[in-house]
Length: 246
Image 1 (cartoon, rainbow, N blue to C red):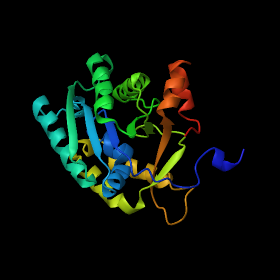
Image 2 (spheres, rainbow, N blue to C red; image 1 turned 135 degrees about the horizontal axis):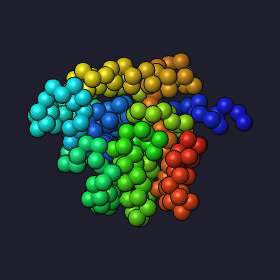
Image 3 (cartoon, rainbow, N blue to C red; image 1 turned 120 degrees about the vertical axis):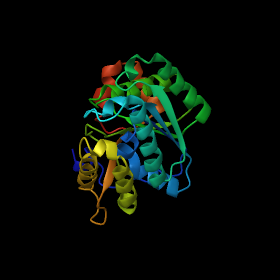
């Protein structure tokens, strides 16, 4: 098999679509698809970002009282989204690390698909290791199976790389993504997520032309493909997410 059957050797423009982002925690939207969001807003695409949990468990150093910390993370999220040009933001109240048992969230995601009717949804991939990331992916896929409208789902790399089938050139908006990452001071205190995210974006440019310095990688699936995968069991989704589907 030639190399381009394993990874793209060209970048793809995803703009011109109505976009929904399901971020389990504040900062997931910027790490996973912040450059792409800046491109969408620069093209005047409608973009809605929903933060699914309160992010309360991110204070691993125990520096804050819970309510103050949740408020801080929301303030950081608003500022980061402003860097990316996103103004349509929702904060859902589900507890950090408990999304998988928040069955109401599954229904709310379906209701959001039906009401917002996105053309493209960004969500963490099923290969992520954080339980809230996996739950967000699972709930979105379950909602897509019930949703009759056509859409595409871009599974994002946040804490686990994928075998991607699509690369987005974010070179022109890299500084906006970096600025958005820097806003998340509460998270950068715990770990240098900004350096890690940008390092992956730099790596993703490897198969692209020399003028591309950074890219975001995704596994892009159609809603029809996700509905077909459902008939073969959930393991297929995790396994085939590493394959080359469009």
